Amino acid sequence: MSARRTAVVTGGGRGIGAGLALGLAAHGYDLALLGRTPAHLDEIAQRIAAASPVRVTTVAVDLVDPDAVRAAARTVEDSLGTVDLLVHNAGVVEHGEAPFAQDDVEDTWRVIETNVRGPLLLTHALLPGMLAAGGGRIVHLNSGAGHKPLSRTTGYGISKGALARITTMLDAQYRDSGILVFDLAPGVVRTDMTASMPVHRERTEWTAVEDVAAMLVAIGDGELDALAGRFVHAGLDTVERLRETTDRIVATDARRLRLSLWGEDDPLS
Image (cartoon, rainbow, N blue to C red; front, side):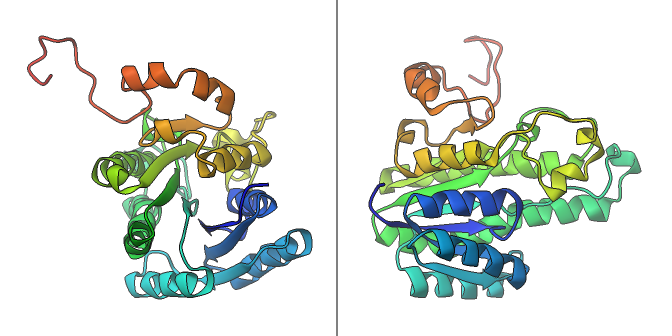
């Protein structure tokens, strides 16, 4: 087990977030679990306390409320000190799966606001402390939906594409200051959210949340630092394969959101 460090996990009271929190605790991280429902957060905190000798604090917070997020960040820093790993896991999807013209645009915006505004606010609140401490790692739980056109869940796709752009922006601005940012796609983990989605109704193969936690731990351990600013997929990638192909990924500027050009004579090149 590596030396104890600190991590913040949003949406840490259930689903993927709970699995990530449990995996990080087993690896020796002190944790702050953030989410809307105190009972869910407390349940996971109790499970962690029973299994791992780490500190756990829970903060019930609406992640799209700026004042509440700033207060939550102060609570986290007062409880844990420096944040080494910030994991933006909290997210939602549309209530239905219609194409945009048949969707409720307010529901589309709810998804975009939750999935983008929340990470922006919390990163902005915690980033000064991370910079003052010499750096840290930020992980956005992302999805192939941010890179591939979808026939439905428009807001979800927009939000994940925006997270990918946030990753590249923060990488460009703060990598030299020690802030390493990653997009981590978890694959399709069986959760209440994914089980409720019609697109997954007939699914029989799911990504194990333990595999997602293992990839996150590898990021936290610095094993993939050379791929900061890029996209990794826990359901398809392995840490070993990513390390083997790092030079190719970097040389071709792969695994990041960018505009494809037709060649060297493209006027945008």
